[in-house]
Figure 1 (tube, helix red, strand yellow):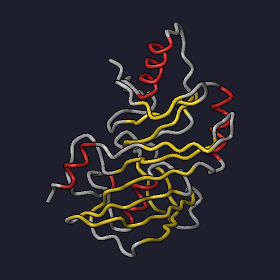
Figure 2 (cartoon, rainbow, N blue to C red; figure 1 turned 120 degrees about the vertical axis):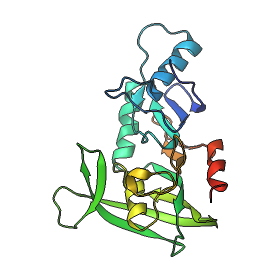
Figure 3 (cartoon, helix red, strand yellow; figure 1 turned 90 degrees about the vertical axis):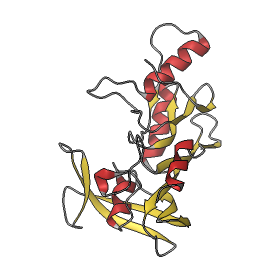
Figure 4 (cartoon, rainbow, N blue to C red; figure 1 turned 45 degrees about the vertical axis):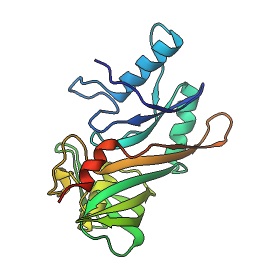
Length: 225
């Protein structure tokens, strides 16, 4: 069964959608439905197009993370958008609900991270570790609620699990992210949401900003004790 699709922005070259938590961006060994499948199905139905539908994946979100995902509808668009992600000209903004009190109120986190691909786990390593990659993100505390804090994140790099690991390393694990130390329990998602994505259109070069609202299931975090 193909997942339904929430479209945030669409034209002849780009398709931006709101990924629900729990859905894979791309296929893996499980063969489960993916966001790419849903995008292809949406385009096939809307434009009555038979055969293969091109959907270019230019970035992805972890399975338990929700929010904006941008696809390319042409190979030229895919190449140009991928280059923007490569040179870090795309501005990504996330919202994170984390455990604990975030202090200071704003700052930059810089760490060196390495991934254990067999276990699919990322960890902070020493600065001279050859297997590591340098990672940076900016954060700003928005508000505290109960034992949790809502934080805005602007990653400067795009490493695997980066936000999850860097926040956990500060003692601020993301709500529900048991892989990286959370003791809170929510089903099917973690408190990390890709709230906006700003990129230059691959043809017109205009700046495009796409926004995804916080999912309704985050209301469960507000009521947790």
